[in-house]
Length: 168
Ligand SMILES: Cc1cc2nc3c(=O)[nH]c(=O)nc-3n(C[C@H](O)[C@H](O)[C@H](O)COP(=O)(O)O)c2cc1C
Image (cartoon, rainbow, N blue to C red):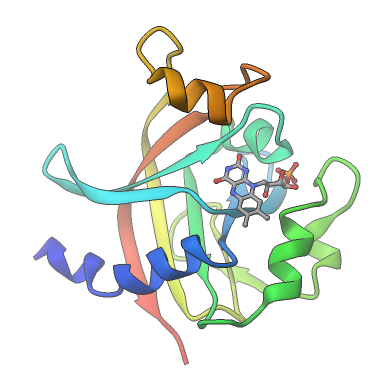
């Protein structure tokens, strides 16, 4: 009965195509950070419900997720937390502690080393099964031209959706 994890995917996609959602990562040393994401996919892989997120290696979040087992994706109610999404999508955890300064509240998720954002509405907690990079050798030319002029190809993390839920 994995289909329950996909019940609210329309809300996730709407937020991705509008103001974004939050990717929250805590690494093995308990260093935590969050950033705004506009790209994610969801579906069935390896017989499991999986969400993949795309993180450019220049992001501070990349440094942390490379040393993490899990991540969470937290989705605000439609049209909410716009300022926070802009802040987390334009400042880096390298120069500002976004956990302390975003105005958001963080509480532990169900998975080890996972935080979720209290002010959000919809949550996915994912356990990383695969880490890979987009490969310029096989990537569509137009995609390279439009998205990777600096050749900073995204790292992609496939996470098994272990918990998905909504909160009032
Ligand atoms: C709406 C929006 C969507 C974004 N989507 C992504 C994304 O999917 N992947 C990515 O690597 N960066 C994305 N970014 C950029 C990062 O959120 C931004 O560079 C952020 O400051 C990185 O923070 P960090 O250095 O603390 O990791 C997005 C930014 C915005 C505003």
